[in-house]
Length: 473
Image (cartoon, rainbow, N blue to C red; front, side, top):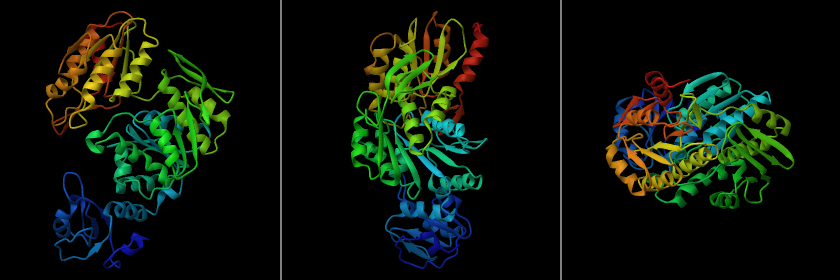
């Protein structure tokens, strides 16, 4: 395939009549005939590895700056966007062959993608899904390494989905993916914004930058579906370059949930006289449902199908997931790892708990440390008892992270650094009618210690403890 054909409308300097066999942004994956794209990253600069790429057989180096190589060099203004376009063109622009829905926001992305998938399947469609939990193509399931894959991997997944004749692809779109142009050139039919709360400030530095990264989705999609109960959503709706459908509970919106009923078994609400029900408890579930309803309405799905699908919809693994440890108390596993996520799951639990609400939580290492005391404050202000422990410490010392959480913690609490020990303590000390929330890990079946992923599945651990401790079924 000729480079000039892949570059399309991108302006460049150099020879475009070069045959290439793959597009790579890591010198480790370069092979004979590859086009190596030099990306300026946050830890290193791809321009430094141009020589390595040449030695491994790259047929051309695509760069912003000068590089010391003897093979052909093509200069472009922006290598990130160039990489995204090259990858899309290399795979035949697969996102043009199906409808594409992108979900962005701090919380609710995963549940919303699954709700949309279930509604579309109820409508008879074959659906592809790309998200934090997994990649799904019809009935086939694959593991996911990150929320939004890099450009080449993403376009490869799209190609596989297009070849499998999916009708619609629903994907989570992270702020990193938007800011770093991983999804640049993707043909989004619908973009959805769920909410914005503090997260990823280690990368974005300010909430305004974080918001603006999310807002990029509404520059590149054909229709927007936006939560205008959220101030950031109001901003995005005004700034969007596409027609927007708004939703909410508290403010006037195109899709306003009225007569909202929150119960232990789930939620129900009206939209313009039609009653919708979802068997996932919590006010946040109303917002997730509204996100999904808005997305499928933008795609033209009839209300009758939407209502039927939501009534049948089940929860997502690691999202307010009830684990049957004992009849005496309730255990929930939830992915909540932000102050807002912690607040949502605790308010949900307090809405139906007959006994104490106990939360076990920590904070991830090598991530925004300003939210650590905030997490402690939110958790301890709403829970009856807190167990502060480790999450994914990565290259930080677990106790250093815990010590940054503790200044925000008030009320009854205990510190147990080892997360497995902390879970055992929670189960051993549970009282009748307690609701115990294991927050932060959710669907993850690993813990990152140092730079190593160690198998750590909280549901497995709970089932082991159920047997070891003789908890009643």
